Image 1 (tube, chains in turn yellow, cyan, brown, blue):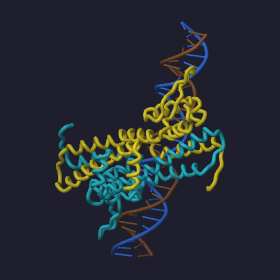
Image 2 (image 1 turned 90 degrees about the horizontal axis):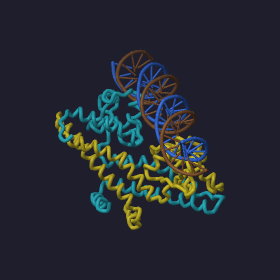
Image 3 (image 1 turned 30 degrees about the vertical axis):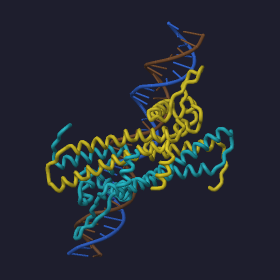
Image 4 (image 1 turned 60 degrees about the vertical axis):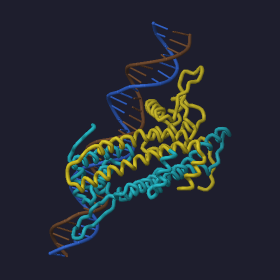
Length: 173
Length: 173
DNA sequence: CAAAACTTTCAATAAATATTGAAAGTTTAA
DNA sequence: TTAAACTTTCAATATTTATTGAAAGTTTTG
């Protein structure tokens, strides 16, 4: 596909659908990814009913996934004067988005690993000395790597406000 | 738990089980994570039957997930002179592991996003000018972010052989 | 070549996860 | 206070993903 012309609505629809299926491959639910894509596509907030309408999901599903997006700090609630219902707006700054996703993933995916490894590090093993050594080396190496990973994720959130850093990373990678 | 004493076998078992459940939270199957943990725990390779025995999984499951681990370049086959069956050994260097995981995730999770965004970047939209502008800004921002991400993942694989880089990252993050 | 020793495949099944929608809960306005 | 407007919950259901195990396939050995 070299050139392509389409209605904006169609483009948004395509983006939303594609983002939804991509979502699965990063371990978040399709609906959540779709709703996020939808809210990102609109500068203004949408109501629950509008979301239901646009992505064809049930009320319960929209409610659950919007709440989850709020937990991830990717979306916030807004109320409009004179309107009774709530509106949901995505955070539109990509670097803030990235930062919040990083933080959440750290919490969910890195922290538990760290806990496991600390626990194993703190235990003394009985058995064959060589095998113990191998196992302990593994645990230590993994622990080192995990903190490396955390540093790097921290770095990612710093890139945010730092063009110099951005250039540096590009240069050394 | 401040001090703890246990048999090595028990420690390995604990590690394997925990790694399995963590696996789900990073979007890989429990069995695959368990098998990986098992093979990491042993310096020498194990046969399919030994894996089945140790992690209590069916032959088919072991076969499938070992193949997957080989695709990810986290495990390789080994044959032993005079033995008919195959043995599977984990790569034991944590940084090589990290590097291979990064590459695989890039391929699976980043590449498809890049493709989608390029496609949307290449299309011309019809509709309200302000809305189009918002949507295009979104697409461009996401595309920028994705390449940023790729740079950083590249950087991660470089840390491997570079202690200086490691210190630098720690310093700036 | 045939049987033994393995490995691979894949349809059936189980388990985990996501989604629905109707009922219950809450807030606001008159 | 009560009815309307809206949000939340959650048991039932659907969908997706992982796992099993027996049958088919392959390679090696005698």
